[in-house]
Image (tube, rainbow, N blue to C red; front, side, top):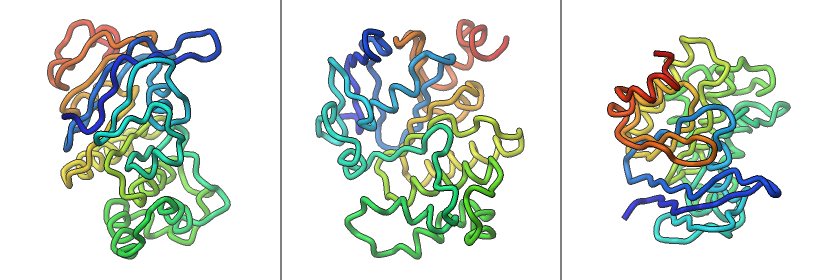
Length: 236
């Protein structure tokens, strides 16, 4: 059984249907990418998994538990944590305090120093700026902090929404390298990303979302070599 299984969910904004019978899954240890153009419904999918929106039909099952009508703060407690598009940091709090905000839903707070050390090992630049206000960081540093904050929640599943958006190419490489490093330690990742080529390079499996519907699925390598994906998303 998959760790996360979404079955035929429908989601509406008012009368406008944003997702149509979307079905996808994430297994333990996987990186699963969700690619598609702007407005395809990628962020809506993550918001629905996170409980910020509720589907009108279908099921969301995580670790054996149905979540489709569960509130967002309760979903965090089940082990799903999201690094949102736009980072959504607390700009007037320090790097350290932002990281600590990631622990609010944890029942067990032992090992916090080790957890902070692990984040600083992944992102040495954050350690250098631990007392700096988050709002004064560069875009790349803020993205590192958003991911680090999510990791401080001890998630069973990490969801990343557009982690490379707006970053310089060298920082894009860093972010994707860190994703593979996190996954290598056993963390499953659901990755929403407009940089389709980079996402497919690191993904075990991937889904293509168009106007609210899944239109193609396969391994990362299969979709990288798909003529339809190359034309639509890889500029070939």
